[in-house]
View: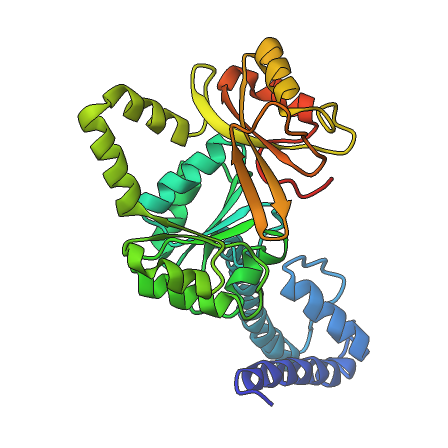
Length: 350
């Protein structure tokens, strides 16, 4: 028997003993109304619950002494039960707040680590209409994430980064991708290696401080690597000799959350889509004429992997399963979703 079960068992045994003694003492008393074990139990029950019907009560001195003991014990038992119920409710609410029960999100991105950079990533995902699960190992971050984002779009999970069930609780089996945002390349690499043991097929994107580690991360199974310093240096250099182009590039890197914003998006071409089988030139003309949207590329799966065709020839045929890459303003997003029959981004079926 577990140690914490011994006091409970002793209290229950003592409670039953008092009930039995109350019956034995009262049953032979003059004018007694507690004449069976059931009567004594019923009296103890209404006393414990503070109902106090008054249909049974002790009349003998010994019975009254036991009743006094029973009343005091009942207060303690009742307080213990209420305390336990309150504790269970609080524990359940705390587990839910910390995300420990896991998430039922699908096609979401798991972002591991909470800092200024990951906050920016999650903001862009939410602006693009995507869902994200943010994993942090600091309790204080949970309230910050809840205050910053709607819980229907962003799920916050408190978990140690070395936990074996981290990816499972974050919905890794239904996720679209994984992005570790820890403060060092080495920590990101270790996390990726550990996560791939149970989720080898989960697409992973990582940002590198050291661009020389790109091949190392790709060898570890990372789908895409991005050098933060490389991107920043290109934008800064662009500002020195072509500031208008640099500003435009920055706008395109952000999600189009307003009608006047611009973005580069990709849309999946279904078999029943009207663009399947048409030439790229025809698709370009229709999108420009109907929506003022520019088709600027095609993405197609080949034997060597996914091929990105930038500004392909007008005669290239658009096939079912391709992604059409477009440059658009925010006001055309709803119409594009209707036209392609799916939201922008990677397509995972209905």
